[in-house]
Image 1 (tube, protein in one colour):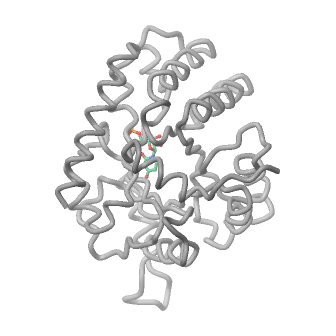
Image 2 (cartoon, helix red, strand yellow):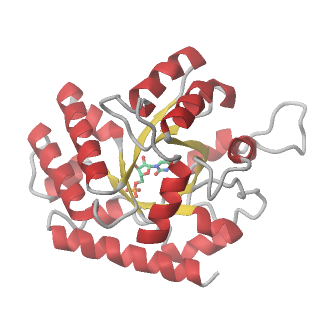
Length: 284
Ligand SMILES: O=c1ccn([C@@H]2O[C@H](COP(=O)(O)O)[C@@H](O)[C@H]2O)c(=O)[nH]1
């Protein structure tokens, strides 16, 4: 198996060279319609190819949302494979947003699917759910380390429903850290001693307001969805992330995609978000 430089190193370089923006590839049925495409595999393929061709040479990260491809069965997954390959070939890092999570023995198979360097769906990083226990993710952590890939662990998600799980505290641990904080602490341990940045990131929503009660200094990236369609803005980033804002990878999906299918308009929208993010982060 060929080995890449660690994901954290590659991501840090990409963020420094291109800015930290991550654009989602989320082919919602409504966006396919808005773009004048059919809600079928041909429409999916055209949508995804347009986004990759417009943006893969300028943004640090593209994040395909696997659900919108899986919806079309094996032919949709084939489009996803091709999109990942083309985006990586054009210079973007690919974070596969598949939010996998299961008992360890099954997690090992998910890891083989997305994090083995020779797998058809190999991606630079994968979103994972730790809600079968952080330890159940161990096979993914180990294979990611071997391959030079990374993980983004759901810690404090952008949706309001997430609080029910993520703000809960272990029984008998009154006053102790909540679940989200525990996930951040696990990740800080995973990234200890890594430079310039570890490969094990957290998903922390840009919609969540002041997070100063959390220790976001995990020495790893913080993938921040919620900008655009979910109501957060680039200007919110310093208030939400404080001193950790330099590790934030802000994600925008529909906020950019609604400007398609014209490639120049997609690029212009991504450039506007990138500039607003640069200005917000520079002001800290
Ligand atoms: O906490 C989370 C984790 C993941 N997502 C995903 O990010 C994008 C957001 O899309 P927008 O169109 O910019 O709202 C989407 O793929 C979600 O599944 C998230 O929103 N929140």
